[in-house]
Structure formats: C-alpha cells, structure tokens
Length: 405
Image 1 (spheres, rainbow, N blue to C red):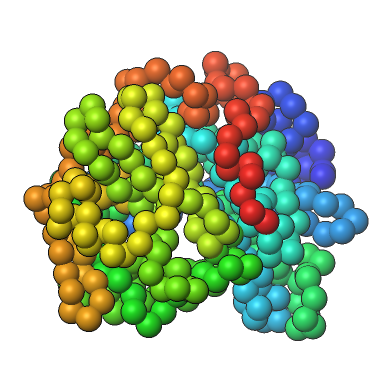
Image 2: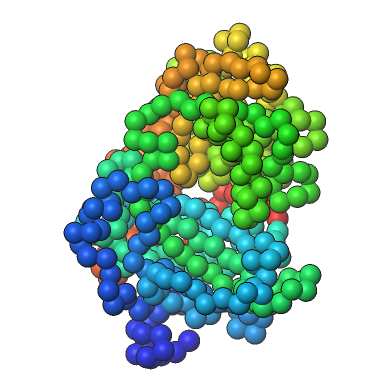
C-alpha cells in the first residue's frame, strides 16, 4: 500500500491503532446537507446510498490489499468477470444505529465477518481477515456518520459483498476478487407501525438442498427465490415460506428471515425454531433472539417443525404466535398463513404477538443503548477517530462460528 500522503491512495488512516489500514479519499462533492436531510426523511430500502464506499482487492500473491474508502460510484469491470457469469459472490447485511450526533453503534460486525467468511469458503472465495473487515466498517460509518437517520425504527444498513472479478470463463475458482462495502439509510422493512404479515407456502420451488449452499449468504440463493416470492405476493402474501427439499413437509425459513414458534403465553412461553442443518441461513438476528429470550427466562428449543404441526398447533391453541426475524425486518409477527391446496389459517388473533413485541423492544433498546449490552454485541464508532470507541478486537465467540462451510 502506498504511503501516508501518496497521491495514489490519499491519506492512510490506521483504524483502531492496529495493523489494518484504510486509505481515505473523501468525496469531492458529497450530497448537500439540505438534500441529505430530505432523503433521510423517508428513505426507501436499498435505493439511496451514502457518499462513500470501501473497496479492497485480493490476489494469491498479495492477499487482501489496497483497502480504500472513496466516493460511491460505478465500477470498472471486465465483461468476462467470473462473478457475473458463474455467481461466485457472497454478501452480508447488518446495521449501524445512531447513539448521538458523534457516535454510532454497529451491531455484531465481528459475527457478520465470520459468516461472510463461512459463505466465502463454501463458494471457493478467499476469506477476509475480520480485523480488516471491521476496519472497513469503522471507516465508512465514521466518514458517513451524517447519513445515520434518527428514530428507533431507522438505521444505516451496511452491505459488504465479495465477488470474483478475474476476467476468465474457465470453470475454476477465480484468482482475483473485489470487496465492496456500501451503506444506505433505511427504516423498518415492513413499515414503522407494528403489524403481522401474511406468508404463503411455496408448493413448486425449494430454496436449498442438503449439501448445497443453503447455509451460505450467496447471491444465487436470493435470485432463485424471486419467482416464489412473486407467486406469494400474487396470493396476497408478504413473504414466501420455504419447506425442505426432501420431504416437502418441514418448515425451514421465510424468503429473507428465520422463524420462531411460540408455545404458551407470558412467563411460560417457550420458543421453537428450526435447527441449523445446512439448508437454513444461520441468522445473526436469530442467534441474538435465542440469547435475549434466554435472558428473559424463556426456554428456546431448536427442533424441526412440520407444516402440519404449524397448522394444527394454531388450530388447537398450542402455538400462540409465530414471528420472523432478520436484519432488515428485525422482529415481525406472522398473522396469517396461506398453505397448500387453498388451505389457510390464522396465527393467534392474527395481529402482532406479545412475545415478538417484547423481544423487538428489547432488541431495539440494545441497539440504541437503552439496555446494557451484556453480550458485547454493539461496536461503537466515534466520528472523532481518537474518541472513546470500541477497541478493534474480535467479539465473543458464539454458535455462528460453527456455520457449515
């Protein structure tokens, strides 16, 4: 990497006082303050991006290198780039939450670094040192801190992606990769007012098969869901429900969220969530809620749930509520299920459930600093790099480290 004042890279900022460095080249013409305030008033999901992005490159000789924060803009890419042709691409999604005008809290970046690397290994791409990943996150959040929206239901969504950019069309792993880190302001995925969503079971399509890429966060898994999601929307649903590929009876997850089933009510509520068998994405929010529910004294079990169990449990009152969770939607109750062959049923009273509401409120409080961060999930970033920010060191190990790869 070029030196501190190199015209090729701009000033080089050492993040966290350690080895990872991010060269910073500020945008010469950022979005004016007044226009940015307009955009932050009602940000659509994934359409309005901040002024900057981070890039890094990888090759066998240098490893990950040339990590640069620069203006957000188009890429120069060969038409023969492997990632465009064969889908050798993995990504992540997580959020930074405003704590004050000078400080943000990034939620579980170390765990997202681990999951990105697990996905990369599954797709034969090089893992990135977690310290470099978090250094890139710190640099972008610090540079674009004015883009963090205010409000409990708003945040700055961070989207890292690694894809093969080597120009070749042979069927082998690439020898050149590009890392990008983008950011955009967003509100709650399903709107600011709590509501229960309708979900529809896919009868024709499956998301993942044993031995496949279901546990990886790779682009093809999402492109392959579009038809099923469109069909679900055509039936009046918000999300598609995926069943297992072998027996077509076991509930796995929604289009972009994990599922929890609540048995009982109040202090006696017990949660059941499908186990991570290699065909389900190991959600960071899922892992978070398992821990928070335990903190509240709730019992959580990872066990298979069949579609028949879901229907009969709701009909008989054994299942009092169902909720989905993910980075974009946080915690969202499921109120109605469109099953197979025209069958449908209501979950609970069809509205938002109390357990989902309690966990959602607790999670939001952890994000914003209203509840003590007992598990070390919130990584603090100050606008002033010499301020009192969280040290650049890995967060606590958890079940996500065992993600199938």
